[in-house]
Amino acid sequence: MGEVGARGKSTPTVHHGKIHLHLTVILRWDSTASEEARERMIFEGDSHEIDRYLQAVNEIQRPMESATIAEEHNKANSAIQIAMARLEDEFRK
Image (cartoon, rainbow, N blue to C red; front, side, top):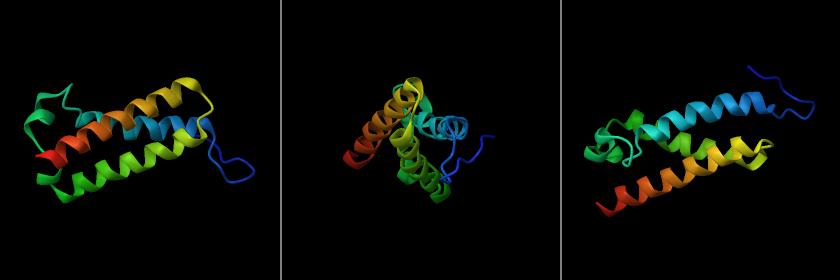
């Protein structure tokens, strides 16, 4: 795990680990990549899964704001776009 800097902010290694976890949750529901995601709705499922998904969407924005590595920023930005598209689909149905 990463270290905490002088101002209490996490270093990029911590962000990278968190981004990976959040990406996993978000991409699990990417309807363009998963047949299971196309057949199921997030909000019709377990409340724990709903909370995990929304938490991942919320948390992925934080590392993006302080991302110092271009690749990290691109992954976070892509995940946010995927999440936004998925949530739009959920609300239309």
